[in-house]
Structure formats: structure tokens, C-alpha cells
Length: 120
Image (tube, rainbow, N blue to C red; front, side, top):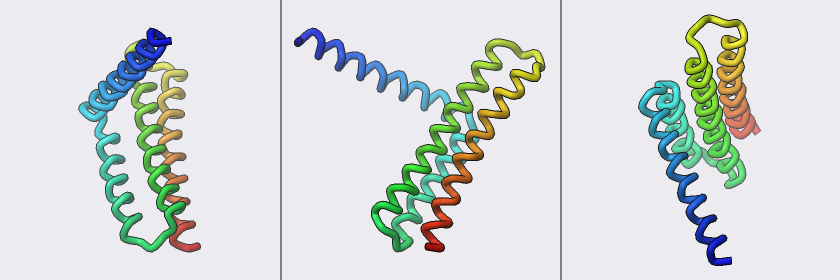
């Protein structure tokens, strides 16, 4: 049992390290991640300036994180596609465009949440 726990703790620690390395790599090369992070900081600050319930605040904050997650996945897709080939290919374009669309949908969802909270 002890060996199992030690290996699980090591696995979780490695996962955290790899995640941090992924964040740092994306931060260094992806301007859009830095832009969405700034938007998230502003949005998070506004959630405390506007009168809203804790649940509304949590939803807005979670949506902001979902936008960042979508941007990271989009960056991963773009990186993988570019690694495989630099040739122009309609399937590669589709993969990249779908990743970008995922970010757009997440951002629209975040905007919808803000609208509902402000109007409701």
C-alpha cells in the first residue's frame, strides 16, 4: 500500500510539473494566451466590482478558465499539425480552424454568462 501511495504522489507531482511546463511554453510563444489571460484578469476583477451572487461569480470565473483551456488545446493542435507537416493541406487547415472555433465558442459562452448576469 505504501509503495502504491508513493508512486501515486510521484505521478501527481510529475503531472503538475508537465502541466506547468506546458503553460510556460504556451505563455512564451502564444500571444493569444497572454491576451486571454489579461481579459480574464479584467473579468475576474469586475466580478468583485459588480453586485452578483457567489454562484454567478463562480460561473464567470470558471468560464474564464474554460477559455484559457480552449486556447491551450488550440495551441496544442496547431503545434502538432505544424510538427507533422508544413505543407498546406485542407485537413490540417480544418484541424486548426476547428481549434480556433473552439476558442471562439468558449469566449462567446463567457460573454453570454456575463450578459445573463448583468441583464438578469
